[in-house]
Image (cartoon, rainbow, N blue to C red; front, side, top):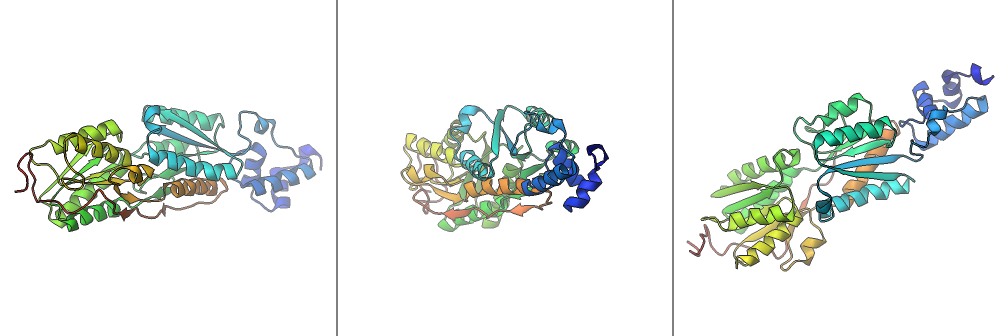
Length: 350
């Protein structure tokens, strides 16, 4: 056959694949595995048909670039153990496949959507890992409409049409409250993230429900931006209130470490006067004195699983929602039974 006589159907029949797979391979689009793409190109070459010149444009990543956009300040990212571990996990899988991770920090959801569209339109990325989902998040329908492959990190109720990887935050926060109640704490507080974030809202609702079931006398929640500064302010507000909690649960380890410093600043002992429990166990939790009790999970493994799920999408699979292991409680030196119930500032135990 001459080059102009060779059709996509000819190549598909010879290679034993679908015409859609041939079209994607010849145009350099994602959706087929590296092995299938190589087989299609070899068959096409033997028949005299070559890939489109556009597919060899230097704008297209040669080995599959994965996009990740985070909505947070650059100085905060460097202090957040969770995302440093998560990024490391993604990179470990991407680099093993000769790919690359393209990371950007933005200030708003609209800015992220514009950037994701630009990446996909210019073929800067083969697909993206999407994080920090809100209720009724617009990214799902908007990015699915343009055909951008993606994997979403969040509960399936939040992530729209994209395959979801998620942790059971409700079960984990319930375990944390039950543990503190079993120690004898009756006034427990939570320092959480923004309620606009889906996982924060899930944790907040589960915290309230668990406190009611445990019969706690008081259960207060404060919202933050996950920074150490915000965690310190929230802790100071709680511990200088007329009725302070005897235990505090934090939504990340950075805020828990800041809370430990505030307790010392106010002359309160941990855990003698107040117990502290962190989410997202890290080296920070094990380096403090006392060491911080934590809800621990394999964050590096979570990132690696996200990258593998995206690879499944890019090779034409249709993965469903995957639940990664639920965070587990690791008791350490920062939690203990309270010295007394219903402590009041300056009043001791009553």
